[in-house]
Length: 357
View 1 (tube, rainbow, N blue to C red):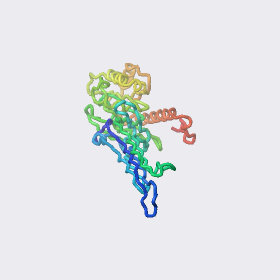
View 2 (view 1 turned 90 degrees about the vertical axis):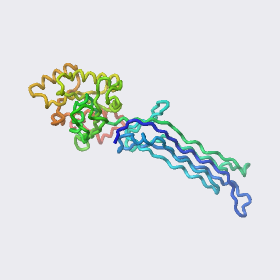
View 3 (view 1 turned 120 degrees about the vertical axis):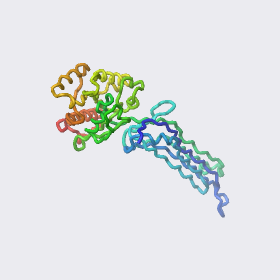
View 4 (view 1 turned 135 degrees about the horizontal axis):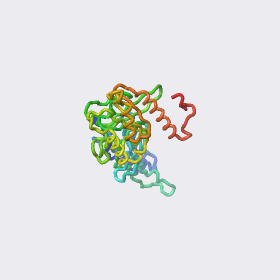
């Protein structure tokens, strides 16, 4: 299935039905009085966060979504029926924006969350509403109110705790397949990953986090070079970035340090907030480096990068170092989740002590 993370739609809630002018006509009731009912409410348009969806591709081919209008009021005190509502299923992480002004209207964060994105118009009043002591035979009625109409932009930012970034062929897809349930395409050529892949990493019973693998970045990505720039937005909601570096490139002339610096520079150009996120260094493919040369190579790379954060030496292919990496990641993610909660949101019954992790 094609991955689509942006779409434009036109939505319209239903108009309200018009009120009715009617009078009771029954035998032996000379002055039956007004009995015109109100019109029905127009249908609403709802959006629901569906955890089973991971793309907006359906809205590329189905742009218009109009709810039905309410029925008109009728005689004999009969109100019009309300128009049918429309429920639009969207992936968790979808941002709904006004296409004209660019204003963010809603964000679907919680699975199963339902929001009203267009309200149906109220029905008009029938003449029975206007009856009074001085107006025994009213002939007034009101039309239904129009429903809301919007042109919306849908933008998907995947909800992942950890994001993988690095040059093409750095081993990100192999890493996510080694530590999670994701099974991305893996090959021995660059740009194998063409769209984001999400995987759930299970650390223990009721202990897990979500990791996202994005297409590789190259220099100039923030200006549109390569594929990665199309998906940089998906890193903005992550709590941690893992910068994966290929320690055994095919071409000996490749300077992995220069490549790593270029990627960090692209992050800074694209979004300073993304650049400021916690970022750890993951030195991959060390199984292809002679054992006696590993320590010196790692020390040289870290020194030239002037990297002060955590550094991990792994081999995604052989899973060397992966187990300790995911345990430390889980501790970091849980600590950040706890820090983001307000005191009222923390239930002391479910507090996890650091020693228990």
